[in-house]
Image (cartoon, rainbow, N blue to C red; front, side, top):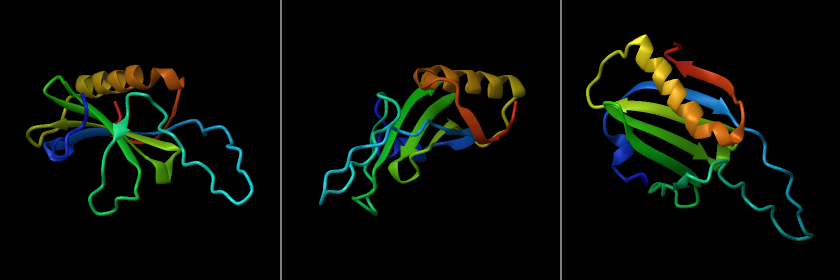
Length: 125
């Protein structure tokens, strides 16, 4: 499911994880040219326009999951990080079992990247 312009603003973030992704391979830079911008780490990520800065390269993916939406977001300016969040319609604390299920869903989605380091998260299961 492609992200919608309004989709990522709906609901409240009930849980989130920030993962460190592997660095892309070094690109060959020819004399007089700029290096190519990094590509998103996952094929499922699609461009998400940033209306306040059209030069900014942000990629996202989201899909309905349980009672809300799971969303992955990658910003080329912070290419070493991938954010995942679980958004629910109403503000509430989620149960530890839901947090573990969310983490498992994120692990399933990022599996092509191999095991990733967790930079930060809230809440921890």
